[in-house]
Image 1 (cartoon, rainbow, N blue to C red):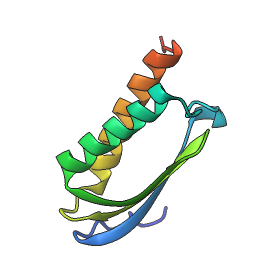
Image 2: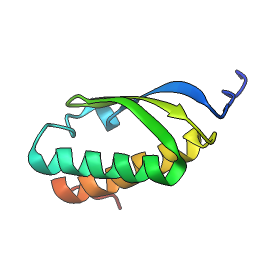
Image 3: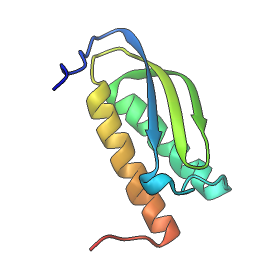
Length: 96
């Protein structure tokens, strides 16, 4: 097993996340763009990340940010959880 990634406050990081099963769930539309932008802004403010760049493609996204307080794992957990919940509601998807 590899060593866990160290979390260092003040470090600039790049985050990449792919959609489940490589599906095109991030297809651009006013609603999808609004969901992603809102969740990203709330997560960044909540966990103290300074965003430098963001790019959402149809099935994945990239984020470049400075982790001011060392809370990147919590930022990712919250961001991806709530983005998925909102997008699943938008696309009419659910799990049992």
